[in-house]
Length: 209
Ligand SMILES: [Zn+2]
Image (cartoon, rainbow, N blue to C red; front, side):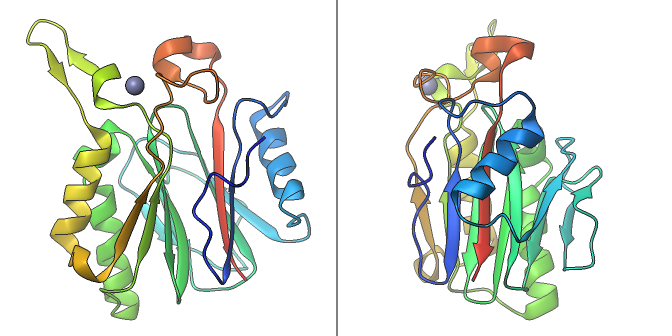
């Protein structure tokens, strides 16, 4: 279990599970991570992720599982937001006024999920500067061939960086890269491409204190 992989920021508690964390169900893995971070008494909100571009603002009264959702954010301190991945890019969004998580695979990225997320925050709070985005372990371009005949590869990290850059001025926010590949470093992380349907899932969580 690693909880120190995620960027540390004052005012936030963050963490991520790796494949070293034993679990029998995905939900169990999440509760173990939450317990390890000392957040067992907090509300945890996760998503039934569908590779959509559906983003929701959440609060203390929301259900703990949101259907058909791939991005969530909250301005309320004390709520843990969670995303699960195995090759797709987990993005943790931190700002003095909010915390959020995004599940950005190829499909969600092509649907513009980061743009949808940032548009929603701008409409609600008028925020365009001062974000920290953490890009977690995801399948790297070399490992992600999407068309063998045409020898095409997909770079989920680059595409999401571009998308954020189109939505705001990257000189006034920061992106922190984990620079880890779930497939190249499969000894540490779960990879759907490498392991197929039996692949476990990595949990990334964040909370404003
Ligand atoms: Zn790789």
